[in-house]
Image 1 (tube, rainbow, N blue to C red):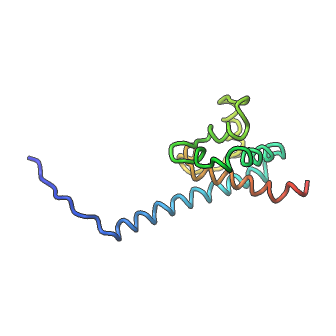
Image 2 (image 1 turned 120 degrees about the vertical axis):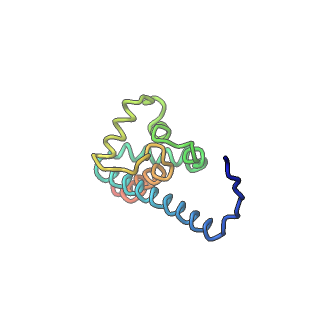
Image 3 (image 1 turned 120 degrees about the horizontal axis):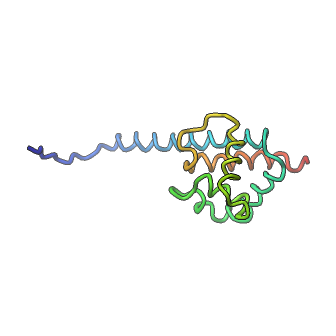
Length: 136
């Protein structure tokens, strides 16, 4: 026998609490990505890699950021292709890049398709480049 359920309205405080927890998770993912990108830029990237990050920003991503980091749009391969170009469009190179970037560190579960984390990674790497490029 099936019970009939009545639809009770959800109180505003519940909606606010859930909205806050969602925003907190996005900020945490972005911050973790920023740290990872900054660490990679400081310890493993070469100047050419960082120049490509900056070039990708100036030529494509600054004007169309949402296409790369919109929900269900960005992932680790999309970001790699945008930065390093289609001529290097092979999974081995992409996997090698991300493996070197991780350097054995634990990143958030699902980072490969986590828009906030990848956005933060990109921004963290660009931040380092912005601080050093004029000193080279």
